Image (cartoon, rainbow, N blue to C red; front, side):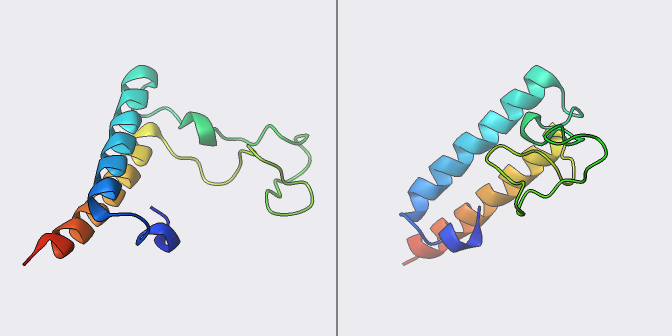
Length: 97
């Protein structure tokens, strides 16, 4: 969850969305393997010739550019689960009398 969006929308809706994203990450891991690289971040970068370094935020950057640290599907699940816990904490704080 990006911090700038953490307060956007009702907390219960954020919990539901993070549940869905966690489930999606688990399903990708089941389909492609837990230790495979996440399909959206598959190293190395194939966007430029081998002799050039990635520059996703520079002049050569574009939508869908894949470079940077690699994440396995297992890592993606951990991130989504962490986001779910943050959303749940926000929800429980709001739900208290």
